[in-house]
Length: 432
Image (tube, rainbow, N blue to C red):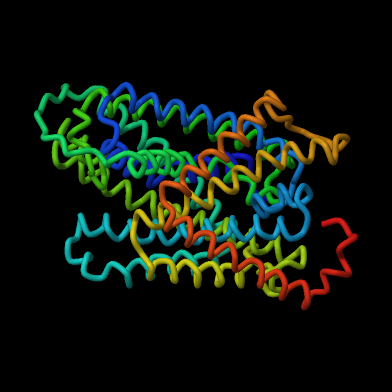
C-alpha cells in the first residue's frame, strides 16, 4: 500500500511542472497588464478548486486505481465509460510526448549540441522512464515523493527571489499581441494546462492507505497548496518584471530571474525545468498504465494489460503507453501537443462534473466519504464552465480539435472489436 503523503505528492507533483515555468510567456503575448495577468490566474485557480471540491466526491466513492474512468464508469455505462478511459489514457500519452520534447529543448539551453538530436533524445528520455517501471511501484512512489517536495521548494524559492530582488525598470519593445480568438484560446489553454493534475491521486486510489475518503481529501489539499504557490509566484512575476519583457519567452521564469538577479539565476530555472520534467515522466508512466489496467480488468482492454508484475506495475500497459507516446513525439510541436492535451483534459472535466450529478440521481444511497462542495449549484457551474471551455477551444483551434476527435473516433472500432471478442453483449446486464 502507498502512503497518504504519496497521495498529496501525486497531486502536487503532477500540477507543478512545465506550465508554471513556460506558459507565463505565452500568456504575456496577449495579456501585458499585471493586474489582469494575476487576476486570470486567480480566477482559473478558484474555478479549478471548485472543480476539485465537486469531483472529489467521485474519488471518495471509488477506492480503486485507474483514474477518471473508474470514477465515472457507473454513471455512463460501458461504451461511454470506455471512451472516457480511452480519452484519459490518450491525454497521458500526449503529455508524456510534450514533456519529453520540451525537456530536450531545455537541455539544449545548457548543452547546445543536444539540439541537433531533439527527437531521438526525446524518445530516449521516454524510453528510460518507461523502463524504470520495471523497478516497481514502491521505487517510483519514493522517487516521486522526493521530487514533489523539491518542486514545491523550488517554486517557493523562485517566488522569494522575485519578491526580494531590486525592482526592474527596463524598456522593452512590445510586440503586437496575438490577434483575437487565437490569442485568448492560447491563454485559456495555458492556464488549464498549468493547473491540470488536480486529481493525480485517483490513479492510485486502490493502493493508498485510508480508502477513498483519504484520497479525496488528499486531492483537495494538494490542489489548494498548488493554488497558493502559483498565485504567489505569478503575482511576484507580474509586479517585479515588466510584462513586455516576458512576451513570447519559452521559459519566462528564467528570463524574469535573469533580469531581476543575474544570468546565473536563469540557468537555475533551466536546471529546475529539466528536473521537474524528468520527474513527471516517472509519475505519468506510473499513472497512464493504470487507466489501461482498469479498462482491461473490466474486460474493455487487452488481457495482458490487466496483469501486474511482481513489483506492482502493469508492464504490458506501460509498453502500450510508451508506443503511443513515441508516435506523438514523432508528430511533435509544442503548441499542437499543448492544445491536444488541453482538449482531452476539458472533455474529461465535463465528464467528471456530469458524473457527480448522474450518480447523485442513480445512486443516492451510496456511501459518500466526501460530498461535493455546494452541490448542486457548484456541479452545474462546473458542467457549464468546462463545456464552455471545450467549445471555445474547439472553435479557436479547429485543426487540433479535429485531430483529437479523430483519435477519439478510433475508440469505436476498438470497442466493437472488444465487444465481439470479449462477449460484452452477454455482460450488458451485469454491473461494471
